[in-house]
Amino acid sequence: MSRVPTLEDLGDVSGKRVLVRTDFNVPMTGPDDARTIVDDFRIRATLPTIEWLTSRGAQVVCASHLGRPKGIFVEKYSMKPVRARLATLAPGVELLENLRFNAGEEGNSPEFVASLIRGIDLYVNDAFGAAHRSHASIVGPARTLPSAAGRLLEREVEVLGNLREKPKRPFVVVLGGAKVSDKIGVIESFLQIADSLIIGGGMCFTFLAALGYPVGDSLCELDQIATCRRLMDLGKPIYLPEDIIGLDAKGRYATFGQRLPQGAKGLDIGPGSAAAFSDLILDARTVFWNGPMGMFEDDRFAAGTRTVAEAMAATKAFTVVGGGDSAAALAQFKLADEVDYVSTGGGASLELLELGDLPGLAALRGAPNVH
Ligand code: ADP
Ligand code: MG
Image (cartoon, rainbow, N blue to C red; front, side, top):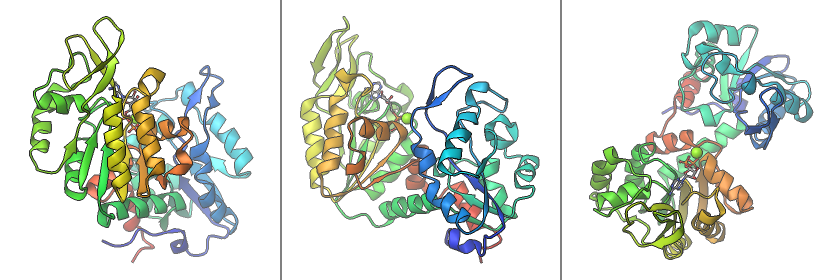
């Protein structure tokens, strides 16, 4: 597999107009016509790439999606507030309107690609969070323009690639979050590359159901039970919670074992499981964590996620966290600086770990400046 080109592979950028595909899909709040940015982490994360280009005399034009407007203008998803923030962080840098206001973006239409690269000399992809999508702005420009990965994308590929190809062992993977079906593919591939798998969060109930335990009203995907059964039969250790915290049939806070009574809802892993998972994390040499252990947005169900986050901070292992909600949980516990790497992509990081490649990376490798 040839190398993904980096900024150095662009040649002289002075006087060139450079289209930079960024992931400025920032969390926003407030009324539709006066949205404000909750956290500008994703904008600041792209500054090293932007500054590398502008300091060498390039004119930078950024382009990003924001939310899911489905191919039409939706005021709530206007880039206006992002453009204002960018103007203070990187004066003189342009930002196009939300790419997903045009159906050609998600449809990967040649006409939309042509409109994006009109008057543009070079293309840079720094939008790791969208690099798993075959959208126009991700796969189109590199067909004709000299192209490169920005610094953020370059680092993501390096860290996640190493995790996949040469992890220090034991390599423990911790998975949580709401839906098993989102993560089934990655579970399969982790069972090949990791030494053990810890499963918490809403997705643990489909696994518990596969063991024959009643799960009450907890999240459970009936059509995935057989798959979970098969994954557990592959022979790699899969650790599931042995105690669970949630609400009983009357809506009262309660602690359960692995069997949930009728009407009960599991919303966090219990303290015993959190301690056991912590021990596995502390003994590992590499840990990848995606997906909270419980409904951490509610304080009553945040303890399991907090304990796992603290173990991630305390372990000597190389620690990587992927996923929007997992990163938000770490930030909520003020532990984001205590792990080795926080990936900016949820779906993209899982897909890169699962498949070893992404459409956006393949496009860069095929660019005309790559030999
Ligand atoms: P990430 O964004 O880190 O990839 P996901 O999007 O897969 O994570 O899942 C995060 C969501 O899962 C959170 O909103 C959390 O409240 C929810 N969740 C975790 N455990 C449970 C549970 N037991 N029941 C319901 N929701 C849960
Ligand atoms: Mg999420």
